[in-house]
Amino acid sequence: MLNIAVSIGEIFWSLAYRGRLGPPTGPRAADRSLGGFVRFWSLQVEPVQSPGWKALMVSQRGLSGRAEQKPEKAVMATKPKLHYPNGRGRMESVRWVLAAAGVEFDEEFLETKEQLQKLQDGNHLLFQQVPMVEIDGMKLVQTRSILHYIADKHHLFGKDLKERTLIDMYVEGTLDLLELLIMHPFLKPDDQQKEVANMAQKAIIRYFPVFEKVLRGHGQRFLVGNQLSLADIILLQTILALEEKIPNILSAFPHLQEYIMKISNIPAINKFLEPSSEKQPLPDDMYVKTMYSNCK
Image (cartoon, rainbow, N blue to C red; front, top):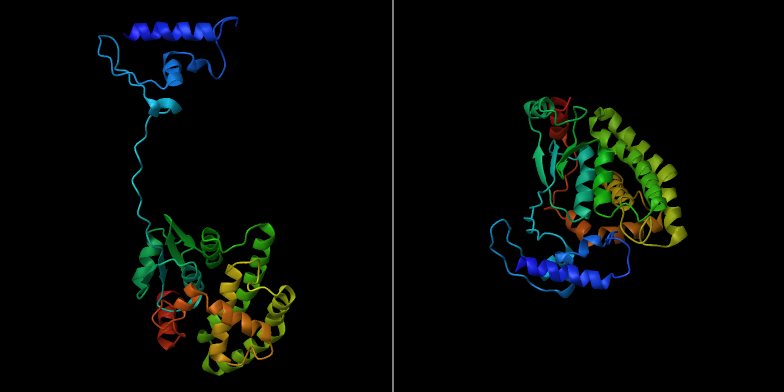
């Protein structure tokens, strides 16, 4: 029966391609066989049991010429895991971005020196320091790299090169200001109040006028483009942290005041601002002590 089918196939293609010199060639040559003939007519040939021949099954499923593939098992996504002491520090920006993206995450707080040593000995910290984030099978370090990866993955990094560059510039500038806040708890008590005045001066003279001008100039809801970006998240984090120390710091910047209200009311961000969220409180003496004893 198989031989008959082969003969019919040969006759069909012989008639269809009469006038050609030599056997059919080219990308469709493989279709001018029994398989091509059967696929052409969408026939189904039942398995043939005969010595020396394998069972043949051609059906409409085989029209693509590919073997049927079993569906892959669904892979359960794991939550990102954050490794850092229990406090704001440089990990707080990562928490902000994950929350703004609507991503749940776990945290493993470093409460002892041995926990940090274990990560270092296990080659989990590329430069032997935290913050470190386990995400998508990677162990990411360096705060800016972590922020860029998360923002890029969750469409918080602009739609093209121009937008990405603007976002990057705004983020880098804001992080310079945020760094003053991060280091403030580690200053001597006599120097802390002086540094608050220094931060206020820099914010009001150097940084806030830039963003006030941007918002006034384009009249849009966000700093860059028409959607939330990493630049908005980091700026909001920094301004709210400054307002904890200097409540009226935005008094001369009406566009920034309106902007902060709008960004704060985005559902995912508004949820993160609730007292029950993963947002960390102001650094206290215990946080400073933990950082000095466990991360130095």
